[in-house]
Length: 178
Image (cartoon, rainbow, N blue to C red; front, side, top):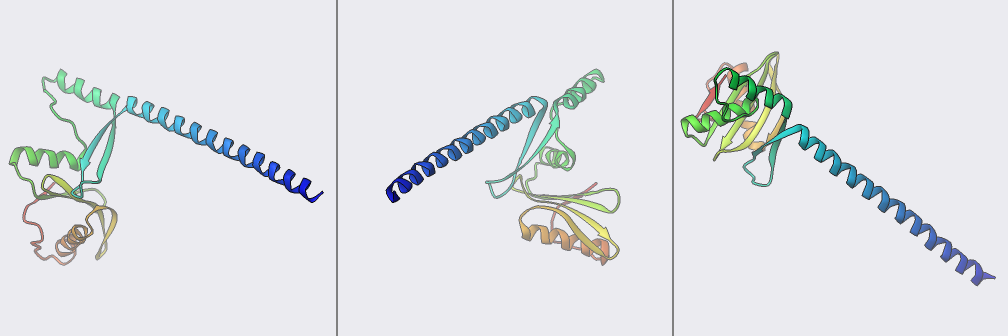
């Protein structure tokens, strides 16, 4: 009798494990197919911009709606302009500076609304750090940070020196502000 229960228990366990594994594999396949379809649909609707980071293993990816991009291209063409490159926000400024001034190392400081400050540091034509800071009373608060922590700390010190302490700061040799 014991052998019957043991054998029956083992058979039940084998069937149970088989069913669980089968359901898990089905879920995994469905999820993978869904991701693939979503990625394909996303790529049909959006263009991606990749901005490499200094560490060579990472990048910042930003997307823009293809319909908006096409509207911008059509609109500029109607006005007689040849839109040669399209980028986004502070990254546009970095692209412009690299192409016009032929420089590879610089800091861009965008002064935004509501005491928001966006800083982008470029080293060897790659992003070393991108941050968003907010000035609140007598302090600078980091709200977004991407990249090298030492550069982020230098950016924070730069803003603190200038905006809070009214002192000159020479951490960065080339700073472009807009």
